[in-house]
Length: 195
Image (cartoon, rainbow, N blue to C red):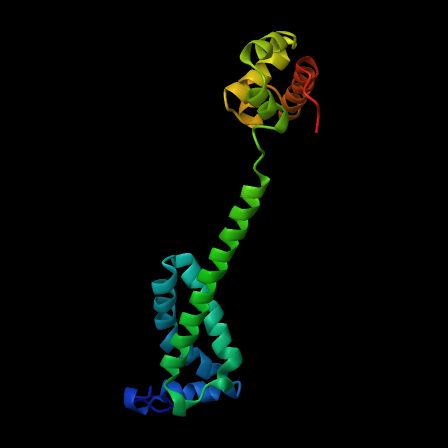
């Protein structure tokens, strides 16, 4: 070996990951670089096994490695190896992500369910339930052509306001107004008492 050259330590001379993690707790950045090299692939593998999505697994893996840096002082070598500790952190964090994503999906679905417009209103249901078809036909003929078409599509065609707007190539607000006005005229024509 030439003079002044530094010999790389043999594997059996390198400190264990457990020892390195204790050094990380003291703020040793070089030790953390070695811990990162030793543990990051296992952390990623654990996250990927739980999350089944490479992007989420990579993100959670980075969070775990930051957590290892910040909380290295909590590592207790007598309770287990650094690898076991890191993989336990990874598993917990990945499970938390799954729960968080599922909770978000549940909230989104609930919000979507609550936001869906009812395609029928009380007036139309009362008309269909309480009056004979002939009277309804007669009153429908009293609507303007645009009101008639919108009401028929919505209540006899079973379409939503949005679908009616698409069928008539009209703005959603306009279609809602046509249907509302048409229903008011039907109510007046049929003598339905508003609740």
